[in-house]
Amino acid sequence: MKQGEIWFVEFTGQGHEYQKTRPAVVIESDSQLKITSVITVVPVTKQQEKHKDDIFIAKDENNKLLYDSVVKVHQIQTFDKTRFIKKIGNVSEEIMEKVKVYLKRHFGI
Image (cartoon, rainbow, N blue to C red; front, side, top):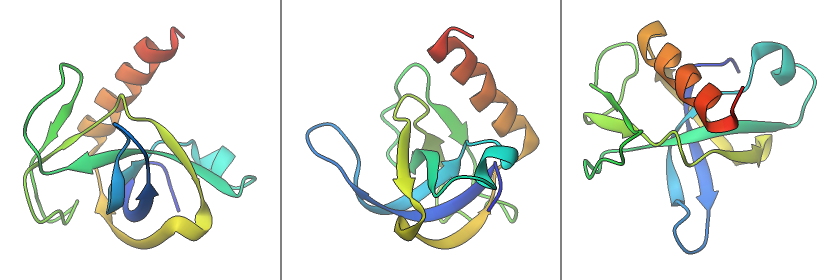
C-alpha cells in the first residue's frame, strides 16, 4: 500500500460520516505506512454536490474509477488495514499535490 493509491474501503460512519464500501485515497506517508496497522484516507464519491474544498477527479486508466468523482478531503478518516478490500488504482501526481495543499491548510502546517 502506498500514498496516492485508491482502495475500496469499508466505511461504517454515523451521522454525516461516509458509510458503506467506497473508494478512498490513501493520504498517509509511505514511511508511516510501513510501521502502522491503521491507514488514513479521504473518501471519493461520484456525487457532484461539491464542498468548497472538494477536488474533482476525472475517471481515467490510472485511477480506474467508474465515474468522474470528487475527493472529499475534509472527511479525513483512519481505519484498520482489515477494512481495505481491494486496490483500484492511483491518483495522479497533480491530484495528490492538491490533496497535500489542502491538508496543510486543514491542519495549519
